[in-house]
Amino acid sequence: MKLTLKTTLTIVVIIFSGFSSFGQNIITSNGDTIANISNLGIITNDSNQIIGEITSSGEIKNAQGQQIGYIDGNDFKDNTNSLIATQNIISNEEIEVLNSSNNILIKVRFGHMVFNSDNSILFNASEPMSDKYLIAYYLFFIN
Image (cartoon, rainbow, N blue to C red; front, side, top):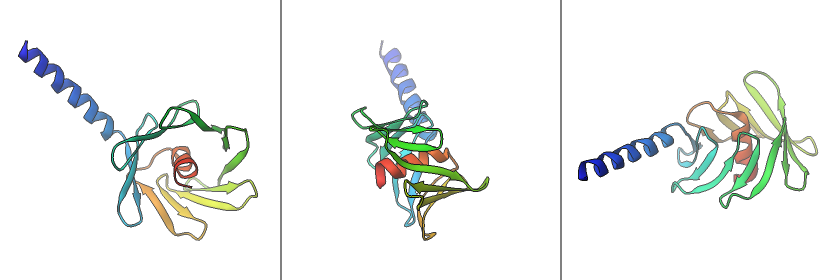
């Protein structure tokens, strides 16, 4: 019985440690890790607490699982269907994110670097990832 329980616990630990390895750390310009976004869209803070989720259908949820916004094509909207920002693809290497007045909020470069409108780096992901995840993280969890 003890061997079975020990084996089961070992498998559980291996599985859960594997989930975190599939995520990308969000790192500030100072080198501090402030969050992690898993390949499933689960967002955790630097204390490994879930702060939100971006679902495969484009829903953006808070830590309580309540929808706080969504992605509609290249548009990011809140729950009242109001446009928060639009993704404007400049090239394969750069995306501008424009607010509803067409002012640049941020730029995403090379799939992992996020800059403000003055080209100062805000944060980056440890590896390239979904531009939409990075944009949603900025709009709904930082901004």
